[in-house]
Length: 590
Image 1 (cartoon, rainbow, N blue to C red):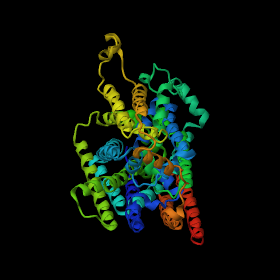
Image 2: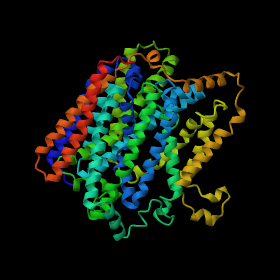
Image 3: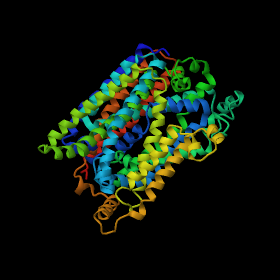
Image 4: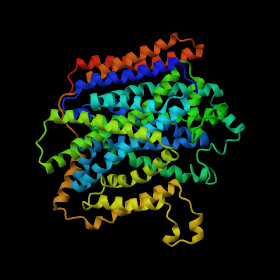
């Protein structure tokens, strides 16, 4: 779809903005704790918005949009799973994760399962995160190339360099600040898009009327029968999706989301903010693709991509938004991937510096590095790893690419769940040996291999006819992995060492630490809430001014009103932040 030169100016201005954010927040990092977890001084609203933005990628506007285009309201279950995960974070898991008092989640794994398991996770996570970041960047390039006509290599290089610059320069502080600003644009903008969609449809009543008129009532049911969509979007699928997302948000490898927040109480607030924003999104993100199905199906099917339905969100947005805001929708799609990429990059480098480097240094008897040297190494490694991600994404872009993205999604489902199961169970069950997590992973990966390689069930004792007719569904794969992984963890319980053993003493210390509230003043020191509010509030004001400038662009009245509404929403939040920042300056922060 054609994008005007004005939209390019909007996109360019946004990219410059977040580069400046990285430069401004460079002064906030004086040591590795600052660089990797913001010195644990992040306020709930900053950490919460960053956790929210890193919880989804461009897939929300592409893959999930494709699901909504085809099956309507079933897509809401994906986001309901996220809401459930964050709400449990709010109830108790958020404070637990923060109170582990570590910088990387392998450090928490060492405290719970020992150094052997820690090493496995540390060495496993680094290459896998690099691969998935590259695939996310590659997927973003494919989408922008097909839908907006951008050169795929240009998208990969530009987005990669921008993420690299602000992540390497400002560290975790820059990551959180840019995530907040991205959310400040994305949330009100998607609300405006949803409103315009309902307006184009003639209201909620007409939405359902058009669904009925076009014979989509059955397909657009919240829960579908097993005869539609190959068994997807049934109660079994919905249950698997909800449980999967619960595990993703409530295991130890989700802990980095809360390492930056001040204490357990702030972690609860951050988690509640995420739950509310995700619930809000659950009810508005599916409207544009449904609108595209009802009003613009010929535009959607015209796209030359593997699944044209994945362009439905962009189609509805470009068709309905005024000139100027289309560029911000592109920004929203870019930001969704960049926000997950920057978080992954920062987490990965933290693992390298805090978990892998010390062990290598001890073995090779290298001289101990100072904090300033480690901080410098962290920035250098961020550039190095980010460059690898960009090169890998460019490599994928030169290949045929047929099925790569889909294969990686399937591999991710079958490989991420097995290593996550023990990291959830291990936070509730303490009577296990040190190798319980590894046994659990081994059992779950065995089932994953069976499902992924589609091993004929006849080898497992089933009849030839049943084996030939059987096809793995998502829910069967997921619950099979869950069952075998849980089984592997539970059967290790009888082999738990005595309570007086070194391992059990260490585990008891881990549980006590995890459930002990943090005394911020004594454990961290003085906060900088006023600086966070003031600096980010000023950036928000700059965004407001830029959006307001778009009012001079020739647009119909309703288009100008949409731009004005966006400027007012962003401006209101920015003004409230500046006022709160000035108030905080006059109040000692502890």
